[in-house]
Length: 302
Image (cartoon, rainbow, N blue to C red; front, side):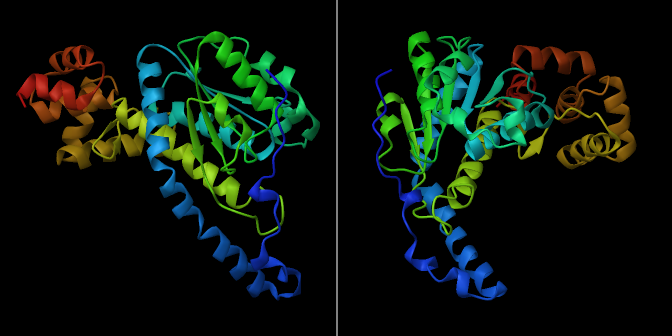
């Protein structure tokens, strides 16, 4: 990749609304920060059309067997790690389909390894196993982080799709992305501290992105998590409650259905809603690629 041209980012500009913040009392400081944070939802809303395109890219690639890769440095990269880690247990999605690449590796989750974000080569090497079936999501508030530039180089060489998530409307890396999700949150409360508004907006975008992808892939029924991995008492209770909420059946009936389905919530749910036995429900789900709505349509008609 050619050298990334460094351009000014709004997050590096001084915020005129907070120049006197160090003179305020504690409540005044908190109010000023909160007033700036209140600008995040509007910035995210303005980027929703591009975010929708990013979701559709991810859905297409995941359905075809590809993966979603997050790549970032510092706070941006850490948000990617958190989001990728939460997808498998929440939605029962296979581990390794959402992959997070943080400049500096695991140690950078808890310790600052700031110099690695300037290494284009590391970004390219970290994403060396990307394929043309994948999607690479670059996370950089400034829109010019060399580590992400290297990740995009690897993506382009492999033929993967690319999405840039940035807080800079003039992001240099936008020209190297198929979709640019720009979160124009403006100058930070503390100049350059992108873990604040820019980081909040990025976190909202990431969990909105992954949640929408999971919904589109049928990992929910209505607004209920039906692929949650019940690994503890709390989650086992949630599975039972979800089944009762979705079907209106009594707890005893739900427990029996779950037992018959070997604990598989989707099978139990389909069986109860369609009034069929477990084997029929399981077969319908297999035909429907695990999507409860489609399985029910097959069993009961539109």
